[in-house]
Length: 134
Image (cartoon, rainbow, N blue to C red; front, side, top):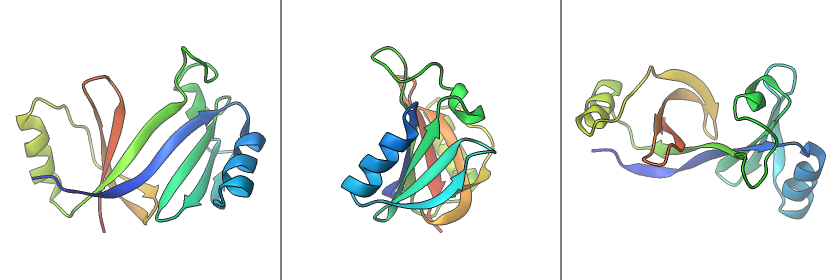
């Protein structure tokens, strides 16, 4: 019932923002698309049709993931999958039929602009954002 169209974005936590910006922009050719340093500590980089979100660990959003990235602390916060159009009701019903808990659909910014998405957990506890393709 759910059909993945593409990866929308991935969120990386960092304690080295300038080095990460240099790596992803200067070396790999990404461009800064949006910065929200005061609100969330977020810098969004355009990577083709997707985004790479860099979140500073000392920010409001970054503190949620724990300490600085290391062998024992997470540096990947979550990844987002664009899915083919499906109603929120049908998606929730499909996920719930497999015992997957669902929360509210919330308007968030992603690679294709603002749109509704929902967070779920995979069996290892990784956060997966499902975003309905516009």
